[in-house]
Length: 140
Image 1 (cartoon, rainbow, N blue to C red):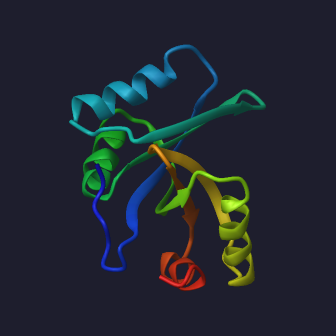
Image 2 (spheres, one colour):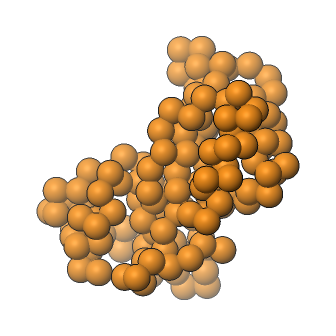
Image 3 (cartoon, rainbow, N blue to C red):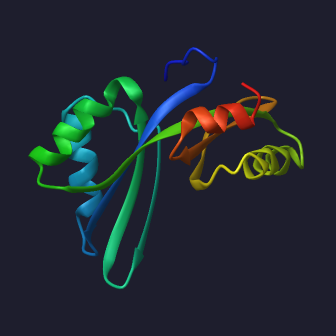
């Protein structure tokens, strides 16, 4: 679904859209992206204080097209960051070990998503400001 970077890690893009908290906003976002041929790999949404925030994960190759589609639909992109995806064994404590390594490497994780489920593994996407620093902290 997404392409690997040179270090073997999968890279994606997280787009954050702020919208009024009213009916039809998720439909507007998903229609704009779908009409542009952009596949949504993961999403999360929430509301706070009358505002909606939708986080969308798309393949790096689709990121520019997604930005254009959102702009054309007059949807406000509030942030845009790289997502470093890491495949983890599906065992208790695996995420904790990775999170500790990121913390020890002084990598701030701004967001995290479960972006893939395999038979014995899970893929977690970490939204970070500095993907190179994150890869270094993980020894990749």
